[in-house]
Image (cartoon, rainbow, N blue to C red):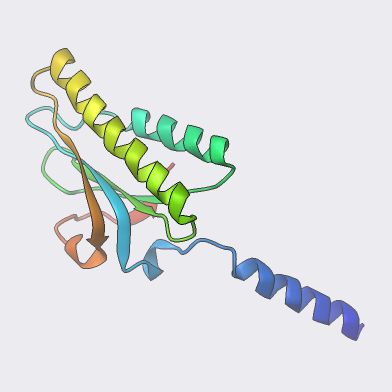
Length: 141
C-alpha cells in the first residue's frame, strides 16, 4: 500500500513539472498577436490557428495560448502566447514563422480589402499592459 501511494504521489509531482502555466501565473507573454480594426471589425484569426496547429503537430508540442477580447470598440482582441516550456531553438523557430505569417497576412488583407484592420505582434509583453482590454483571458481555441 505504501508503495502504491508513493508511486502515485511521485507520478503526480512528475506530471505537474511538465504542465504549461495557466494565464494567471504568466507575468509576461512571449508573443502577443493583436487584431485591430479600421472600421468593420478585425480579420479572422483562422490563419493563426492553422499556423499554430501545424507547428504543434510538426514539432510534437503544445503551445500554450489565451485570448482576451474587448480591446477596442469594434471587437479588437489579442492572442497571448507563452513559450516558456519550449526549447530555445523551437521558440525562435515559432517566433520567426509568426513574424512572417503576420506580415504576409497583412499584405493579403490589404489586397483583399483596404479597410481591413491591422494584425501586429508584440514580444515580451507584460501582463500589466492588458488592462485596456475589458474581456477575460480565456483559453484560445
